Amino acid sequence: MVTTITEGVKVSIETIYQPEYSNPANDHFMFAYKVHIENMSNYAIQLISRHWYIFDSNGAKREVEGEGVVGQQPIIEPGHAHEYVSGCNLKTDMGSMKGEYQMNRLLDNASFNVLIPEFYLIAPYRMN
Image (cartoon, rainbow, N blue to C red; front, side, top):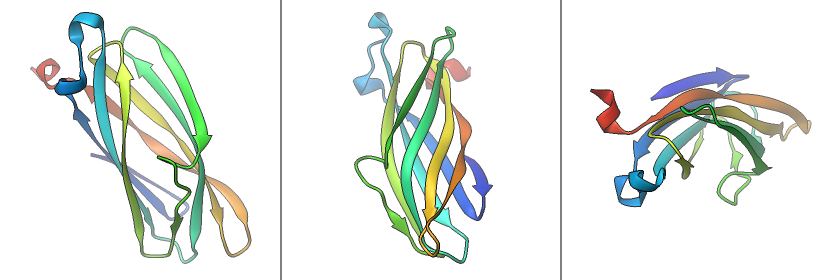
């Protein structure tokens, strides 16, 4: 698990290789990742959008941007957390992701970015 804290918002990521949805013979490797976003600040915040940078070990790069996460723009009260699971497919059995969330502080509608730590997507058999 990897973790970062930006402006009182803690983001932790855990990854899982999904062999049942992968097809290595066709260069298709599926990974799930679980994100835990904890509001350690004194203010309610809302996750507005996400921006991901995705890297395959063959040098391929792509970016994904969009509103919210898995169809939601959650409000996270102080001391509370939001958790979700999403997925990413790669053309190689190793890669990485990183990015940022755009958040709004509800008190004054101030916008700020929260870093998503870089995390690695690695099929377990590559760990030997």
